[in-house]
Every structure is written in C-alpha cells, then in structure tokens.
Length: 70
Image 1 (tube, rainbow, N blue to C red):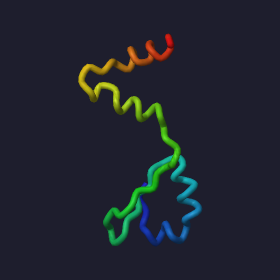
Image 2 (cartoon, one colour):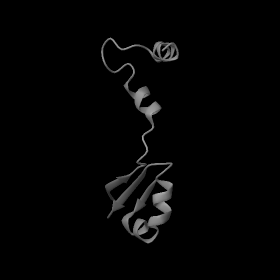
Image 3 (spheres, rainbow, N blue to C red):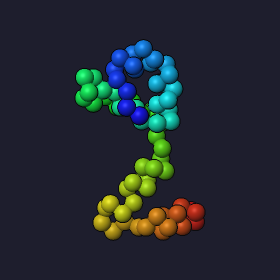
Image 4 (spheres, helix red, strand yellow):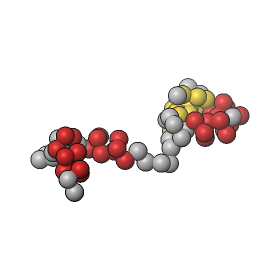
C-alpha cells in the first residue's frame, strides 16, 4: 500500500494497525521516504527466501524432511 505522509499523519492509528498485516510505503511530494512493516518476523518467509541462495544448500523438501525427523 502506498500513502502520502499527510494521509499517514492524519490517520496514524489506522495505518499502524494495517502495518501488522501488510507493508505500507509512505511518500512525500511523490517520492518514497519510508516503509512501515510489522515488527513480528515471519520466520517461514525468511527461511523460504534463503533456501537455494547459498551454494550447497538443500531444497525446501529436504529441509522439511530434516526438520520433521529431528
């Protein structure tokens, strides 16, 4: 979601609540100046973003198998 700084200031409570579920980009004079995101980490999304990036990493299926057998 993209909103202006003026809109953010006038309805800060609304956007703080929305930031728990989605990323909010704040603009000023049409330029992006800030990004508001949830403070809660989505650990599953973080892990999925890392699988396959580093050399010799295991696939998502192999990671799931290993996790379930520990």
